Picture 1 (cartoon, one colour):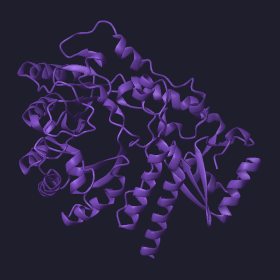
Picture 2: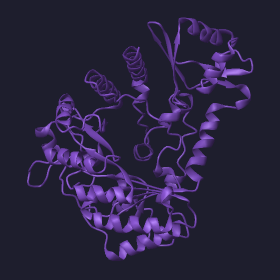
Picture 3: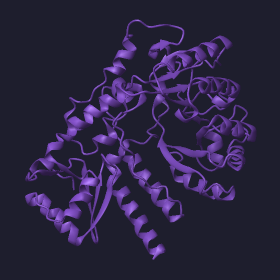
Picture 4: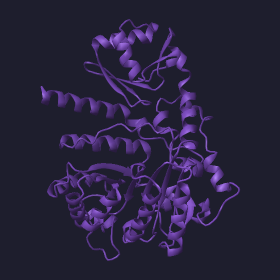
Length: 443
């Protein structure tokens, strides 16, 4: 049930528009998409909550404070929640003293994945001239920003790890170490012990690696030009990397479509074998139709993926892996529509969206140029708005979805909503089941 907050009687308090209420056998669960709070109420407190629905009254001060803490109950003087979301959106997109850079030191890659968005793009690596200009670019940032976050991207960034080290050293010359954070998106094939140790020294604290199924499926989708194994090389690399850098946060992304979804559960057996099961975080993501990779209806639509996501979480629970969570508030949308976020390719060209890197038609600038006017390609991102979308304004999932992917909306003149809109209730119930299981175990 989605609450219609406008119909609630107003007595100096009001229920949040972002409350999602789901019934369970012994009460209700309230999930607030703004705060991320989840509250289980037994029958007694369910009745008290229902009183709020009918006449806006609440006589239990402690209960009232709990609801307020979870942003599920608001004071009328707090103003309109929707307008506050859009105000916060502007602040996050155009304010602050933090800069986020996604840097591709090379567009070359040692894999030939069939769904890769980089097909047809030039596989260049940063020249010495570009590296030196990047250093100057980084030095200039310290005048305006206190915090800096760098995501290393590609291509395969570890093919140019010497450049990563050189640029990270420049970052630390200009920014206090405590104000620097960094991660890498890598296929993991080159992640040897020395690179892991260097990542530790450079405080590259997290990596994302992709595994697309058991060996025969993964090696077909995440393949070398020679067709040799990558699956076992990656798992062995992760095992050794975590032995020398145990603090490294490893996320394993599983790119799913209808051709591999039925086999991804088999990954768990190999994670157990390599001692990785409880040391990494595994999640699934849909293959998207970039470069016309979705043929013969093999890609999932939002509803289909939402169901598969819940099934994946359920399977994990059955096997003792607690990979269940609701997505975080995403009011800032993404770096593509923020003034303080840039994607920089191996030529030093600037872009706003990761998916557009090295597509010259989407270029918004260059580290070699000092722009005096806002180019039209940049203007379309910085002027991006969803305030006039009535469906979004009324949607209780607005703080998480924020109209879906901006790139999709800009290019397709449509929106691709977040899967949470389709599977929130199932995920919340799963979280409740986990909490009950833990309570029984600790009893």
